[in-house]
Length: 257
Image (cartoon, rainbow, N blue to C red; front, side):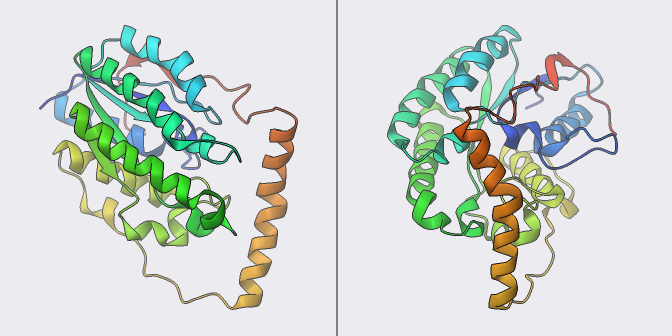
């Protein structure tokens, strides 16, 4: 199928952190998918990316759903709930009960939908499996059921063991690296039945295990430079996206950079 327009909804995962263009803005998997779809469709292909870092599920629905529907796109990606999982008191079933009608509305408007089973960030965070492992698994399973129920395209990053490789993630261990985003784009395009450059799916060889002392030092560095600032913002009720606006709020052609 040749889609004529694509709108990407969500948070930092879809905004493209931390896969940067030379000018310091973010690219990410959605820009890569849009660029490839534009090659298939032609210069009239329209792309909008309304995702904003730090957004919780309720904010994504309240701020992004109606503008997305108003653009009447052929294809919509919806990736949300990851930031909610980082909160200590969150019920995945409650999140899924809110996500299901969103996907249903987009499908009823005539658009195809892409949803995700998220890659396993818990594997890279000290104590991550204990804190968010079960919640992430429940949300991922729910996304699979929603995709099946509404005929959405499912991109299963959780099942891809390559995301256990540290180089697929940026230094903050929460956002994908350049190669992580590229591989996510490859998965999305494969799910859509669109050809993808084989290089997008390549990953470096798995490194040798890090000695215990060096691993603990790396964990302490991460906690000091990434975890502590996040906790501080959370306690003050501040989000990294409070002063950020959508990078592509309206449908427009996308050029290769």
